[in-house]
Length: 109
Image (cartoon, rainbow, N blue to C red; front, side, top):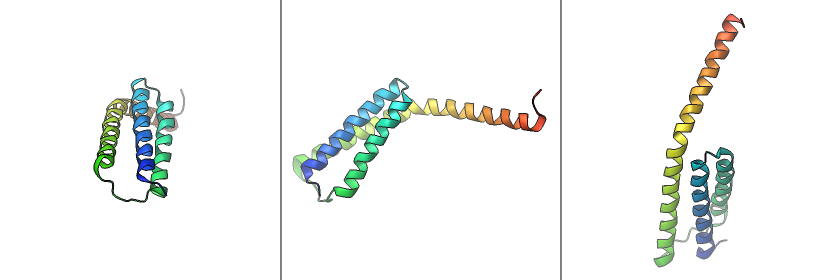
């Protein structure tokens, strides 16, 4: 089981990872973004498996809240950076699917 100090250390690591994810998204380094996302997910799993769930108080609680706010802010930035890329990817996939249907219907010229 994890104590409050251990839990805060995991939250701090996750906040650091999400900041790295923002930087990867700013560079359009999608492969690195995915790797960092997997690392962050591993920390979430660690918390699920080992956090006692004992409520924090005082400075520890405030630190946890601040780390969560940092992660939410980074998540918002990542979404703002990835949404245009996802839209472009969706258009490419749609166009490719249309081309494939035309080729299937009419054959290659």
